[in-house]
Structure formats: C-alpha cells, structure tokens
Amino acid sequence: MRLNDSAAGIPPSLFYADDGVLLAQDLPSLRRLADLLTRWSAETGIAVNVKKCGLVLERAVALDHASDPVLVCGKPLPVVESYTYLVFPIGPNGIDFAAYLSKRISQANGRASFLRLHSDSWGPAHRLRIYGKYLAPVFEYDAPLISAWSHQNEANKKAF
Image (tube, rainbow, N blue to C red; front, side, top):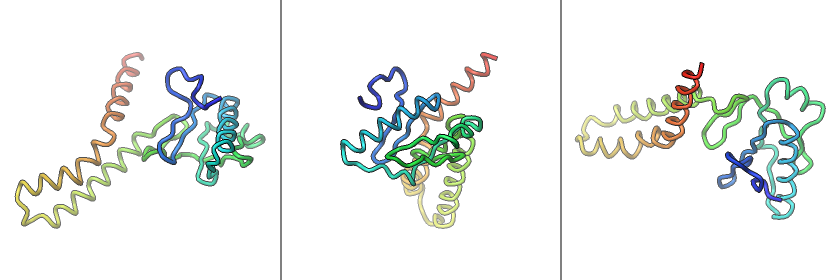
C-alpha cells in the first residue's frame, strides 16, 4: 500500500524533492502513515533522516505522544512547535501566514534597501529588470496560496 492510495481530497502525504509532510487528523492515522513511510523507506532503500523531521501537535495530543511516540524507521519523531515545509511555517493550526508574510516582507525590504543603495546611476529599464529578477519573485512565489488563504478567511468570516 502506498501513502496516498486511499486519498480523497488533500492527500495525506506531500513530497517535493527531499522534503515531505504527512497530514493526519489524529495519532492513529499518523502512526499508520509513519508505518507506511517506514516500509516505503525499506523497500526503496531511501533513508528518512528523522533528525530533520518535526511533528507538530496540539498540546493535548502532544501529551499522549510523549508516552507513546510515533516512530519512523524505529526512531521517534521529535515534537516541535512549528515546522517549515517549502518555506511555509506550519503550526498546530496549519500554515502560520502572519509569520510567513512578516518574513517575506522583511526579505523584500532587505532587497529593496540594497537596490536603493546601489541604484543611483541605473536607468528605469535597468531598475525594472532588477525588480523583476530580485524583488517580484519574493511575492509571486506564493501568491496563489496567499490568495486562496485570504479568500478562505473571508468565507469563514461571513459564515460567522
């Protein structure tokens, strides 16, 4: 059985290159996914570096986990408050967009400050090329996800 074989909707495992995430609603589901990942690792010969893993749990669930940890390849997954997956900080309630946007804005400001310091002699065409190459990607990378998140937040506000 593969990790996403019985998936309906959002798959329980997402992988991109050597980064992956397992999504589960409860500890029994997570344990099942962890067992599947362990079997997959053994079958393919691809090692899972458990030291680089992080398990984000709600406080009450974390207490249950402490007495009976989730194992991958025989090693317990470390519990963390937040975990970064593909540049997005993920906490017990999902992606922490406030922290993410704060970091991205700080990066954009840093790049803009650099450009201001070194751009006195650049013409408008060169400034536009530099903006397109170094500043715009900071926001364009995640624009679809940010847009979906803001639309979801608006829908949730209207529901209450």
